Length: 241
Image: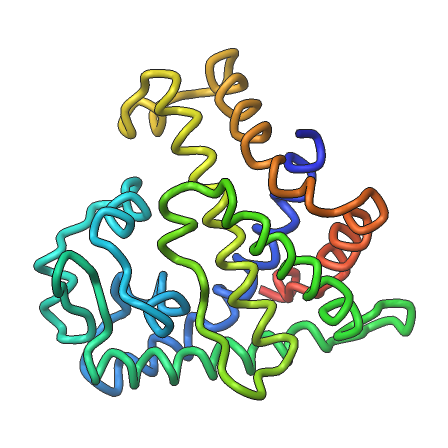
């Protein structure tokens, strides 16, 4: 449980910093088509691999306003037989977005302002560990995690490209744990979003960590340190912004 609480912000830092780094390019990618990024950019690694059940995507979007008809309107995603899938145009956009993410990750994570920093060696060290976590998660992960995995991995993808998609998938495991924690506490999404600091919030976070911590049992103590240290060593570029 303690490990889940410690590694969670490290994973989030890596994820958020990469999303921040690619935002201008993603907007330009959509802008060339007269569009703005929609729900598909949040789950494109899964959609490139397989259709996603409507219920799973609705759960994924529970914290934000989500209008399925508006999501379909630009023509990049569509609902067929109870699932979301990419259209032909949507797949073209998603493939280009994947290349943008992969290139940004390689550029960001290879930065070594000091020779003591591992750079891309850290990516190679943590990649197989994250893969094992995703495999372990199939046994007891929540509905969104199961619906959004496996993720699409192109042939010949770099370790950086693979780590981007796998970390994205791993974050869904914790998100399921959090939804389960506040749901078991009898809260609605509006109530949990309005919840301030205090015992009730602390209890939900503790239960989230307990549920999330199960997946890390797939790693031994040394491997957990490698995962934490490797992800923690990845540059995020945030200090320059």
